[in-house]
Figure 1 (cartoon, rainbow, N blue to C red):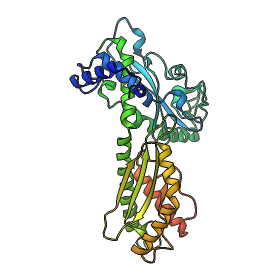
Figure 2 (cartoon, one colour):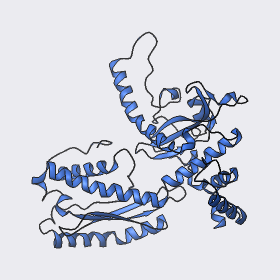
Figure 3 (spheres, one colour):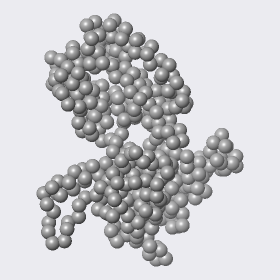
Figure 4 (cartoon, rainbow, N blue to C red):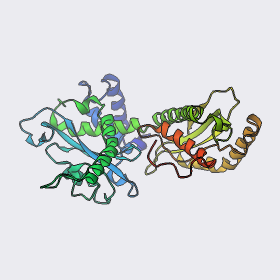
Length: 370
């Protein structure tokens, strides 16, 4: 236990005692600075660093100001853009609206572009396909086009800016979610020399909460349960005549059984699932269980995948006679539960795939659209 956390026995005892006697989080005025330091230390493994970002991934990036009281001795905290004092952090997320990284805080007077460069994230990564606002012009990213001197924007430039800003809405939602921590959107009133440590502790708590195994397991169950309901409603509303021919509809109701391995080092959480048909009057469901390690999950998956496929086919024959030739039970090893409407996205993709299979549509489903 002590080797895993990096804390000594005395530090663990102190942390437990202080958490028991203090308030509910770093924003609570009774929360001692020693707890904040210990939280940051014990949760450090949950916090991605700049080195953890994947060079093959496209990121959205933006900065945000975390406000604090105005201190006469610290004019460097004043942000001319926001007309208040605070510290700046840079935030990156994926195109699936998954939080990927939050930088260490820098004085609020600094520009977003400066803060991003100071974070070190650009030392090893090429941001050519990253997306940011106009504050990142000059870093080689995809940004909105600034109005040139002497003329207005052309129609195509306006349309380009419109599309970039639509995509950028994802990083704004990610930041808004992070700033639901009260201490991140209200003036920090403690001594200013503790602010950076407190920010780091909240970042660690946020990553631990967002990506904790149980939180993620619950989110997956909600998304896939919702996807089954949405798919069924889409079919019954728009394609009732095709129910017996659509790969998923013809074998409904179904139960989704999945396994989730929590994040391990450089590996993101790993998720696999399969679908089993149920008797016609049974309720649909999604049940996700946790396994200890990624290796354990993948070993079990590959050892049983063919046996499971054969069993599913037998259940289809027994429970839904006549559907054997049409049924297309889904299985997957890709985790996709982030974004604005992940359940809707899954349902539309399943329906599109089924319609393509019976040649009602020809092209591939549109990427990134619901």
